[in-house]
Length: 145
Image 1 (tube, rainbow, N blue to C red):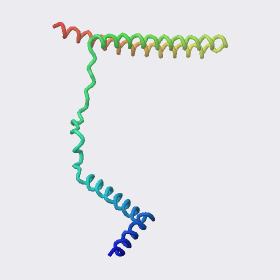
Image 2: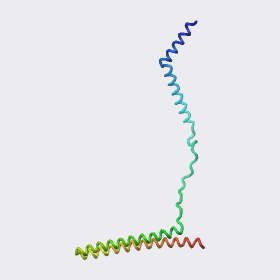
Image 3: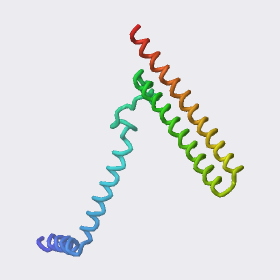
Image 4: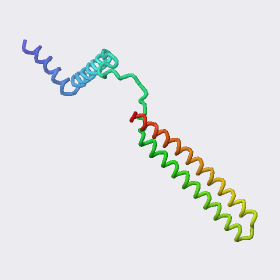
């Protein structure tokens, strides 16, 4: 029966040429791929590919050494002195300007305010700096003994 086989062959070739079978085969392939990837993703244990993270421990800041404390203290003394000198100079400058414009009361107030602010900054810097220097000296002596 040569006629029966040739009709079937002609029908499949015709469907292949017009794209009906290609489209079904591609759709089936894409569906199988999507299903396989989805199934594979569901079978993965959560975090199986990642190593266990260490516990979150706060990292302690490194302690400053004796020399660092002394250096910081001398820096604080210097900063306090510089700020104080700046305040005294600003007060003196404003006082001189007020005196030149014939405002002697304002001039005295500006000079006094500058002196007070300057004294405060100098005292604060000196006290903070001296404390840090003493702390650093204590650390250094502790290492020796």
